[in-house]
Length: 637
Image (cartoon, rainbow, N blue to C red; front, side):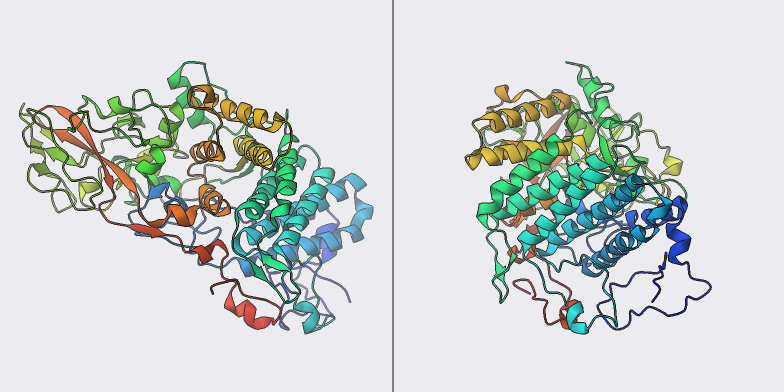
């Protein structure tokens, strides 16, 4: 029976009788020979399956899935990196990736099975390279499944109905360990067979190695830190990996990362030693420079055919476009406190009070952050910093009380109460503010142009706004929902280095090596800190435990949709989010002093985050469980 491929509509994984091949090809259906006999046809097929890769980018939604526009519930608002006006607590992925993943796996398998039949039209190197790309796509898809569900059915060939029985199609879940080994084998094949260079948005051999460093690090973490297990009747561990495999996976991650040595480098095009402004601008630029030496694998957008709305959703309010959106991602003070270069208390929290217990006063809001590491300024818009040639005004209000003898804290420590109304002017109840007349006769808007209490729901609820990935020269007239087309960097060399450093440190803790791994990890972290404009480890206590690397990772990869998965694989998010209220930093202007003070406090909306431990493994869709008696549901569902 002849096989046919449906380029646009071939989406069924063939779990059910509805998927049948036809004996006669309809005239309007593209056949295998129309696709696989020309390079153009193969390019079209590859473009199709690349477009379905599970990339958590600008168009990812935890409720809608991949390739959806999002407005509310940004991914960073589930990880503690940010607050969202539209999210008031913990959340979990609810869209269910299972079916879409197996659709893509089928398309990759079909390509791998069909292409060799047309090998006479191409060189052996071409065939092997294309097969390597298909194996890369399949591996990336299985990784997306494994990090969500644990062990899943391994389908390595196209399932056929009615040639195969229903029993043959009901493939049981493999162990989580076997799935990661399968992923590693696919990526090893991809590395060995794809060429060194390829077009933007497609894998080369080093892309495969980079993804292997990511996937194997995840597997090593599960082997070392996971406490949740699930066995089937044959004693296959569907959830969890034996701890004895941790070193194997960390070594595989480390070795894969080393393969990129000399092929990529940290972006330093405008970087200069000791020049904080140059270092700041360098870090901003790395997310927009298509020629960056750091970019390994990217997803391109191009207006008007392929677009997203990142700028419209996230610019500070004073730069809001005609759509009326802004400040959806609001970095938490918890995230900001990860960075160095501003006054801190002994517990690492920001220092806002003097020894007398009164607020510290500043002439300008940026004075508090005068010596901050440039990477923070390039990631977060701090109150009063400049963006698009404007000072971004973020205030909680104006303090009108007495200032002689200092200003006492407005609320007790740990309070989630609203601020007192006495001696504080915030804003009117409508969308426009009532300017307040200061003692010198000038007027000031209580919340500034971008503060949360502009009263129309478009201000910065945490006291900060996001800068990373916002186009710095995009005119306000173009800040619209469907007008952004900046490239998403899914894999950059900084992550590969962080994977390598973490794997090296974990190998050290497992008794591997003779100190070389630890030395390598320290060198890598110092390279990243140097590029970021931060002090070397020797001045900050050294590489004493894995949390030093984890902290660096959270800073470097902040708002790149990686942190939530890191917290999950480290199995610590349930501890971080245990009825947690994240912290904010509210700037006030003291009218009587003509200076600013900052109030560090818990989110006054009282938004609490709690991560349910069963979420470490997501629920397999009940509809798929109902289709096959061989599918076992994850614990707790």
